Length: 592
Ligand code: ADP
Ligand code: MG
Image 1 (tube, rainbow, N blue to C red):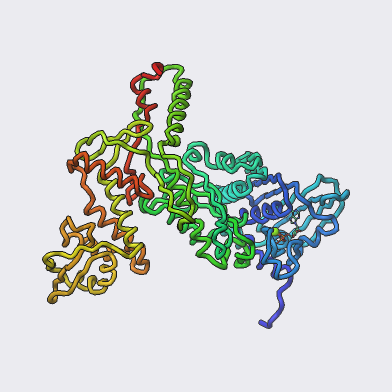
Image 2 (cartoon, helix red, strand yellow):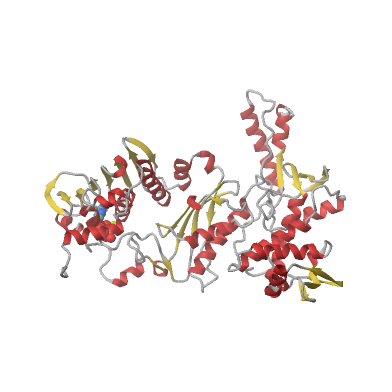
């Protein structure tokens, strides 16, 4: 075959493959165009799962009738004119490709009237060829109707998934944009049924309510972070959004949605930053629900990575990741409530709700007077910084003040707090305490080491010998000093103080066990895992009788923890039975 330049039609269809993968990609491009045109109402309609018809109507700036034909040419855009414009991009689009691509693989009609114009235009394009371009009457804004998507690219059509799946992609997409733009009124109707409608009143929480439902939103917390002006070396990264409490978790990462400068991005490292912030608060294999909106100066990102613009490149990724992680972590640490004990059905009375309100009010007033917030946490303005500003750091309180009442079954500590009864799992609590102590010591590299009076000789199988030899340094970092002693044994000379009371050989074996199944490329995680494991070995066990002093000591140490409400494995350390619930159970509500 001789070399030929492809006809414009074929070239366009090939290029369209990059931008328009499925019906939801059409919706994405059209919605982004509407947002760029500053619309505050966007309605999306799809039929036949978007194959038969996709229609996006907006009330934005519109396209002048005499520019309609331009809008559908490849590389035609009103958003940039010079490559440097990409450094200060405030629009979602800039490639001038979407409309040309969409029109080349469908039958597309556009009707638009531009701001301040009297005439509006209508244009019909099929397979990239303009069939009609005529004046018409229309309100300000743009309506684009895409019919018979992929009619001329049967290969693409074949790769589409079941209708239900394609519909779901569309609704997930519109929901996400509704979350990122709560000030825009969105509606989505599929197969004649309205599936989403938002009010456009600017409140993210209301959009979340529409998308996730009440039960989920009740378990979400607003994130708020401010740009740190005391750090001129850092550019401002503003993190907003809502994140789920640890109790709200899923089996995969699909409910972690991240936006950068109003653009939905699929970036595994940002997702990782969010997941990391839940470290030790969620069981392994569980992932949070989160909607994270990140804003950075436009010159700090490069969006021109991929035609769909679903990826961004950061100039200084570490700054963005740590800002996201800190904001999410801080929100969790400050606001995760203590799980409430539920006693099931109870003695009720018809005007229960009114009484409960009164009671809550009374309790809340009393607690506020005492300086606590609703879940019994002492009110203390959040100190969103990893380094102290000036002056001594303010003490933080992550738990209500608790008074020990006693122990149940040598397993749980019963405490009185400002708003009722608290039950503490002594083993889980001690795990949390040890975990944080050990992590802090490691972080400061001044781990407390206990020299053993008599070195302990431990016989090992060759495999473990190899492991130890290969990890002497790592073991030393966490406080174990081992030396080879003969061919198949080691001498343990020092152990971390934290395990000094237990069996040193057992502690070393636990550490080796973790190295064995740890992912060595990620040393940090392996170490964290090792620490968590050690804690589990030496923590006060369930079934151990504790003296009042020991219990009080444990509670004080737990209060000093950064994240005292869960053990390092994500299980709760304490449960709360509120004064209100107690009163309800005892039928004492009327007596107040
Ligand atoms: P891009 O968005 O990258 O500029 P598109 O192919 O998506 O490229 O759109 C081409 C041009 O058409 C845009 O730059 C814009 O001027 C105009 N346009 C497209 N959709 C709309 C709309 N809904 N409202 C106003 N103008 C629009
Ligand atoms: Mg566009």
